[in-house]
Length: 131
Image (cartoon, rainbow, N blue to C red; front, side):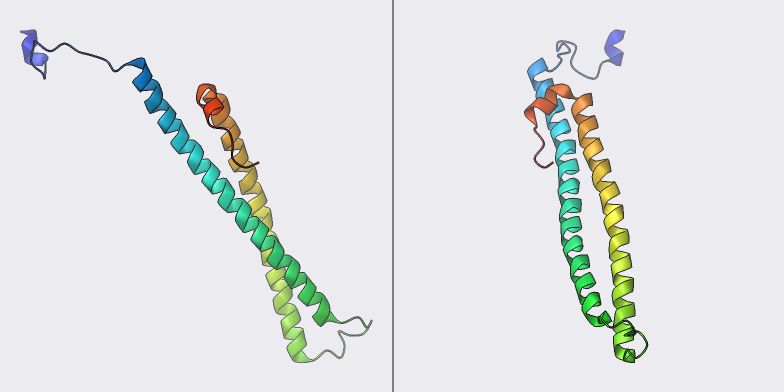
């Protein structure tokens, strides 16, 4: 009667995988998650570095177009005023994005730490690649 509930030949007995194979499977899963976190972290850090440099350059260009006379803003040419306004908007948007990236980078670092604390056996094998 129990043979009705089995999917395999009754002569075959159930066999579980070896613990070594289970550990390898678990390690591969954790490594996949760790790699995804590290990739996202590296991408966010690269974007932050590049954007930071572009914002610095925009600030320098804005300083040059602003001039250095105390009443420069009164007789500035309309084209320079438009350029100054555009640079100010770009700088504000860049600084906003930099703040967002800093928050994201902090979250990715937290996720990496949480993964290492939840899977300490696998964390020892997978050392973080970036700080």
